[in-house]
Image 1 (cartoon, chains in turn blue, green):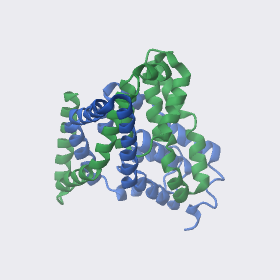
Image 2 (image 1 turned 120 degrees about the vertical axis):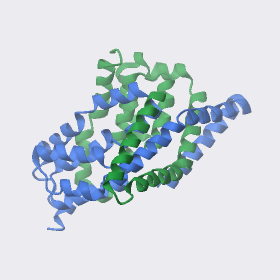
Image 3 (image 1 turned 90 degrees about the vertical axis):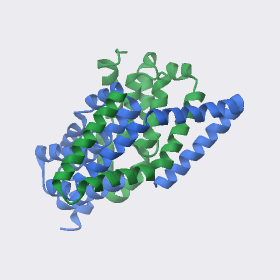
Image 4 (image 1 turned 60 degrees about the vertical axis):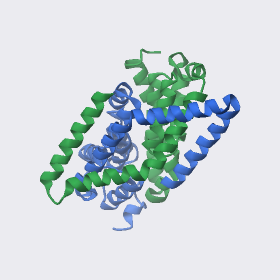
Length: 176
Length: 164
């Protein structure tokens, strides 16, 4: 997946390079590459620190800890703990979706799982350093504060609207 | 920006010390994990930054300001949400691209809806979610998240970005 993304991005960059060449010749091509390299070097230290933080978070918080927390939480408590777990768990969709499946199997409520998945995407603690580094403090803080209430709200909405019937016949039932 | 670097270095040091007290060489394991991630992601980062650089020199700022700037209002926030949903890949890909668009003159509300749209509506992970979580969970997730990216952009623009 990551390899595919890299290739897709490289292809997109190459296409834009050709566009730049057509519009302004080699000088515009070099200006684009130089601009990219400039941004990258200006945030190099930050990226280094961000990755160190992300790696340490991964070492300190194991997937097992999160799964133990969440197994059978339900109701509002489940929604809040689900959100907290989502915020803390590092890694991309290939890490957190399999974990969400294990919650589903353990019998967690839909609200809990929804708030887990959405908090992973909105609160993600290990992603914040990178967001700070690349997008700047104003945008990052605004974005974070504005979306602060969203994961529990979405969990609650899922629980209220779809809480009773939905997970019957879902994968979670296979184990029971 | 150096303040943030310092802050991050502080957080890293704190985590390092905490991991050390937990024993089992956890502290070096964490640093190694971070290093491996960085090395593994480097080609991706490089491609993303070169792409962002090209976007910066190629996208005319006046076009961004007209379509995504402060005066573009609701339309810009909706477009930001959808554009975010279409950006593939993780934060290493999307953040440099979003930073380029923001620097070119997109409004705060547009930028926030862009990030939130990428985070919540991400079309790239839909098939994975469907396969693992099943269609019903995916449908519920899509339905309950549906209004939130534009809402986030609207709130950001209203409260911090200077209104419409």
